[in-house]
Length: 136
Image 1 (cartoon, rainbow, N blue to C red):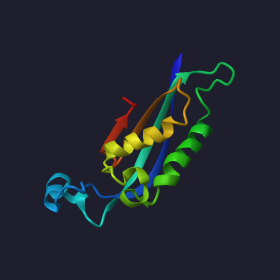
Image 2: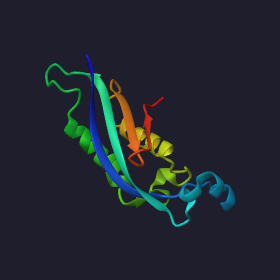
Image 3: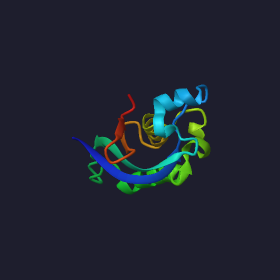
Image 4: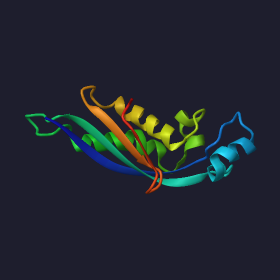
């Protein structure tokens, strides 16, 4: 029997969407207000789901406390109250769109989760705009 456990978390971060190899006008045409050279911020919400078999000894898929610690170390401690473009190594040369952020988060968490578990990360950039990544 496979079950998914989920943990919610959040972080606040600033970013600017732009390509270094494009002119300001090109960036402005594609990214609009998100191309602000002074950056802008979001209150990101995150849901991390881990799917696997229930351990007959513990009754857990995995200990949610352990999942919470992974999220804190791999996401919250690294991204919260940061400028993603300037302060987070993964975004030095990667545009910090919601799509790229969710893949970076998934990769950071994936290395800490046993391979027999499936991992899904849902990232809300705003209450109405969100992305999902399952490692595919």
